[in-house]
Image (cartoon, rainbow, N blue to C red; front, side, top):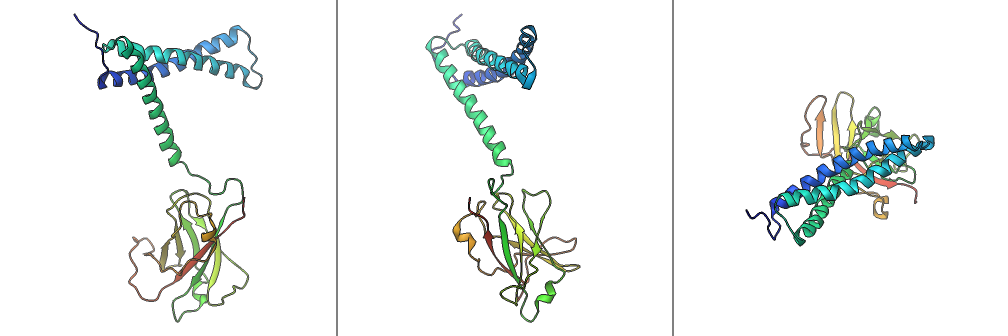
Length: 249
């Protein structure tokens, strides 16, 4: 019965990948066991984790041996022979590396990334302008906050206590801690309709152009207490403008 084939099939590569993954798991498991046993037999010191590092080193060595062997066995079982075994080993190893890199990339992208790692948290300076015919006293009990998918809880904003340069607006600030292109600035009115503004900022706005005041912006949504946000009906409403304030690295 003829078993050998002189080319690689997709199914052989897939089985090789499965064999490689099994080999990685088995290699790590056996390697840690062997490493721990050798560490105890050779009386490797546990000071500052030396025995643990030794076990990890043995586990990696065993994994680098077991994984290629398991891939070759899987390919051989699928009928791959001669030079195609070596070619298949290379293709499967590259495939596993690509899968691992993709998985790490997806995981890394899902993590919250601090906007300014080596410096103080950047501040979003903002000004709020009341509708025509209303004074800034209408903002006396309003609470500003910033909502992003990266923050577990909305970031509270703070009103400046000193008099603004423009007496017709009320100024404040809020921290921009994480990188994200989805930022909602909210003016929370007690017992009234909250105003929600979508900030037109990139995930990393730490560039000179964003240190200048933005254009005045109308709210994108209005939300009553306990209700779903809706589009504003139009007409004169509260407006905001904003800029970034941070220290150069």
